[in-house]
Figure 1 (cartoon, rainbow, N blue to C red):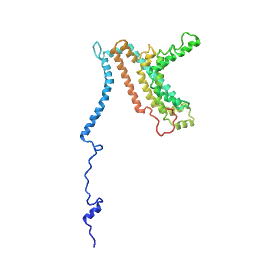
Figure 2 (spheres, one colour; figure 1 turned 90 degrees about the vertical axis):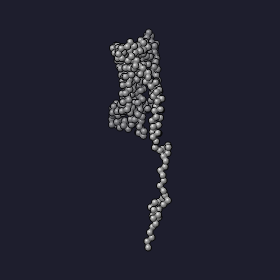
Figure 3 (cartoon, rainbow, N blue to C red; figure 1 turned 180 degrees about the vertical axis):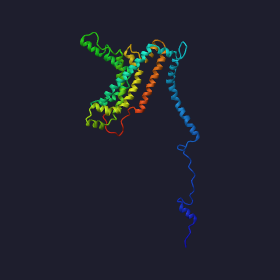
Figure 4 (spheres, rainbow, N blue to C red; figure 1 turned 60 degrees about the horizontal axis):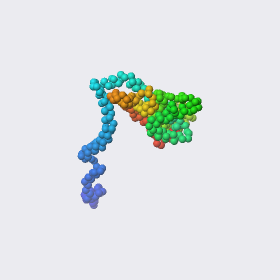
Length: 331
């Protein structure tokens, strides 16, 4: 006779937990890892705002407030009248047009010179093996921390009217004065700015050259490519984004350079920063100085926006790729 299984036994067989197992109530969420309650959700944005207010307030007090005062002063003529009267007066002055032209020409010329010199020096440091190349590439980082007037003083010490070069000439020839007297001209300002801003181009270029694989250069050389062909077809495509980013940065810096122009003593070289200084300190025309400053700020912001666009689209010359092949660059 077949024995019938008891119901409780069947349930026990089907449920491994046994007949006495009961469903456990859900565990309470941990306060540290559980979902946030409604008060917590409201508290988090408030905390973020409280943490953000101090730096924003400090930035507004230190930077935005003085900038707003400059803009307000530029549209507040001292003798009354329309707000655009100071701009119309300054734009009509020949000194402003000359200063604007001089600023743009020197900034563009110094940028082109820094790009050419920085490219040549970076190629030599990165791809021409010589003793001390790596130390020289590290020295560039230190040079970036120097103030601009130190470079100007060094050039005056070397090439000034009473500098080393003219002193050697007068000692050798017995002449009353040396032949070098160009530092007080636009060419002297241009030389000083090219000398000072070239490392700003070399730094991203050396980082870009460190990503060029040695195998690519060896293959191009084995196929009969000359050095200038290797530079044009292999190296420059890798360096163009960093070259553009460095050029945009140098253009912004040259546009606002004041110390180099002041320390060279070039009286005929009046840039926009020098015109602001002249109007505010020498002439006492604070409204006109603020107008020129606003124009300089607009140009600087536009160029800085261009620089950030180039940096965002090109990567700005990032460091070497991890795990890549061997590289030649000394950066």
